[in-house]
Image (tube, rainbow, N blue to C red; front, side, top):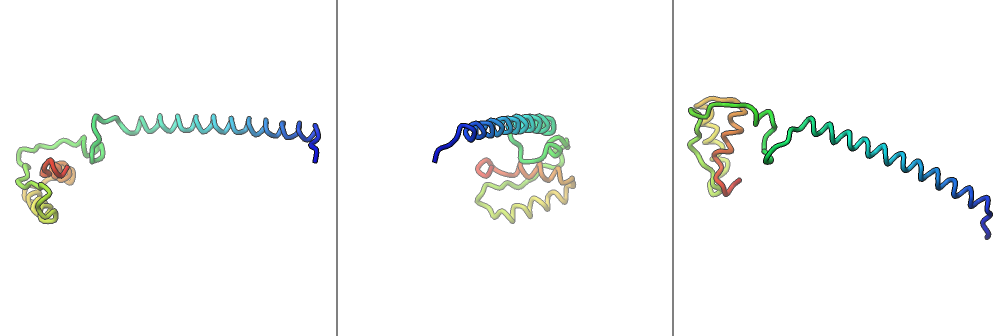
Length: 113
């Protein structure tokens, strides 16, 4: 089964067309990825350390003087009892969900972080 020069030339032309198409697609994909990375960089501000909450929660200020929780969770206590005690204290002192989020972190001892 011999392959003619015409068939070889046609095959080479097909391969060349496929290579050009592949290169165009690769450039388009690379451009789309670069564009998406640029958009993500604009939407997500850089952080010095990873934070457990959204940037909106982290950026919300509040006064901690009257909202100092009196409970601490070291990992030995019952987690549900800790949350109930914390929630009770927060209900008594007031505050928004943002305050709850931020202050809950302060009740966790180093071993549980």
